[in-house]
Amino acid sequence: MSRPRRLRKTANVRRMVQETILRIEDLIYPLFLMDGQGQKEEVPSMPGCFRYSLDLLISEVKQAGELGIPAVALFPVIPESQKDNFGTESYNPDGLVPRAVRAIKQAIPEMVVITDVALDPYSSEGHDGIVQNHKILNDETVAVLVKQALVQAEAGADFVAPSDMMDGRVAAIRQALDSAGWIHVGILAYSAKYASAYYGPFRDALDSAPKFGDKKTYQMDAANAREAMKEVELDVLEGADIVMVKPALSYLDIIHQIKQATNLPIAAYNVSGEYAMIKAAAQQGWINEKTVVLETLTSMKRAGADLILTYFAKDVALMLRG
Ligand code: PBG
Image 1 (spheres, rainbow, N blue to C red):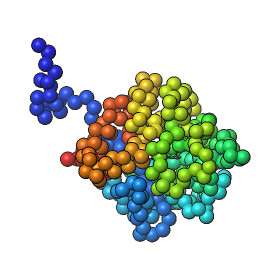
Image 2 (cartoon, rainbow, N blue to C red):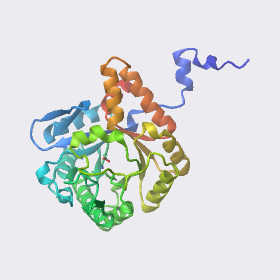
Image 3 (tube, rainbow, N blue to C red):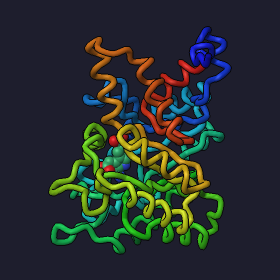
Image 4 (cartoon, helix red, strand yellow):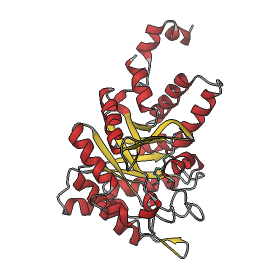
């Protein structure tokens, strides 16, 4: 008689037949940074996540490196006074992000540094692009994104990660990087990025919520799967090195479908709202945080994610080390 339970008999047997293995190498640690010295502010809707001033950011990145986490993704908090409709501060070579990249590369040269390419942290309108008459301009925005990516490459970023969802930005950035000689700077493209309420806590963290409307004219409709395939296909043709699905948990089917369609590595973004839900329930004592986190991230890998951006990165690295 066939008895599947034979393979679940003991911990060692289960270990032998385990299909999906979450590794520390799969983790990318997203970090919020702000100007200042010796400052660390907890994000209220993301308990355990902080905005770090540069000096403290470096020690956080060092710790991550010591735990074996190979990569960090940086997101800046920009003061309102430096924001405008054109996201001008996004391509200031002495801005917060370029300074952070240089500091990390100096202190922890082997750490892979991924920088976000999008205008929203820098936009007085809280949108990912330039606004005109309540519309988000595409090609004009792409021109700014290109400048932003070049400044980040110059500072030493290993991957630039366009999260804006403007059309044609991957091709434009690839071409500009190549012409400037940054042929080894990669593009991690937010290819299937959905207009999601799960980004709420992140917008609190950066104070970057849209001042009017929503992001539905550029981010995708949660109801669409085939459109995700089109977005991925375009980003692959345009020169992406890694494609991303975001959010992750409600989009495991999308990750799975993309896995069948591309040979590129796939990243999944375990976003702020997914983090907040687990933290909130755990704080109430309603779920076991550690096991839920491992189960959640394992499901993302099982669906087909090769890499996972997660605010739990340090916790998971500690758990995986045992
Ligand atoms: C914006 C951006 C967002 C996130 C990463 N980059 C939010 C948005 O599109 O409004 C969300 C990440 C998270 O929720 O953890 N370019």
